[in-house]
Image 1 (cartoon, rainbow, N blue to C red):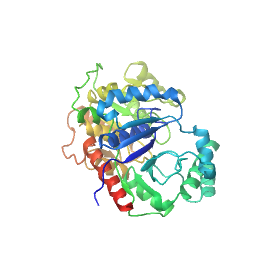
Image 2 (cartoon, helix red, strand yellow):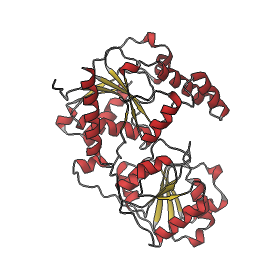
Image 3 (cartoon, rainbow, N blue to C red):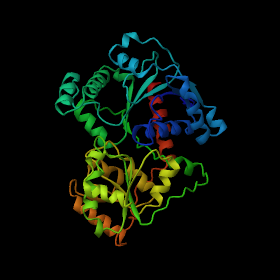
Length: 389
């Protein structure tokens, strides 16, 4: 039986513009892939006040014929109500006609119908498949009460979804393995799609590059991501600041680090203009900052993917990161790895790059081009639809 690619896909689009990194970036770029794969896409969000921002985003990235495949639907419940629906599905009344629905942060979307549910998974929802154990583990690990209950509710909601109607799309093989170990729900219908990077769409459409001026008196490395959750740029910043007179390069941190965490040497480096913090950058500004750097640095205690590594690889800059399994999956042999916690080793790599004895490696195995993501999304969803017929 011939299958049409004219599928209708509803996307939970509520939190797509909360930042330029992480899950919001994945939501935006996944959505663009679906539109460019020629699916009919419904963007589902809660408030008409968000409409203009969505339209401006569409104007920037989509042509007229592509925008014609996008429908805006501002009938999504608020996040507070979404939490309630995770544990009280009997209250769900809204019907939306679609072939697939894609959820991100809330496993259960409160809509009725025969659509296939897609759950885009970036990290496990909790440490255990039992929601009460997840709650206890989270509290024992020091999570706030709010975050602990959020993990518990997501875990409960996930455990009660209809498996026969659910497709899980993981952000990486590493995340898939972790989730399979926790939830013991490995199935052949699940698969992995890497997110593309936020610079990839202009290249796909062959748009002219926007030149953004970014001046620096010294060469600099760029650290993408502030000090939060598992991201830890400060450990590298500290060892660099402690050896500042030996370093002929500056550091630029895109993100924030709490003032109380800064050592005196770090504060001195900032006062001398050797260390800069930047935030709220546009995509063009961020790209310019990376392209004008001598390399991308990323240090984390755990990730589901690692956008900074993918972005550095996409722009063909030297990438320096700690030796995590997920970073090897994302980067292959391209990055320069240092052992986690060995920040003197990281500094030595940075010094060699800045002095020209190390450069970007040539053994790129991944490009993170959007054309590849579009192909995988299209083939995967059409195959899933064909299996269901």
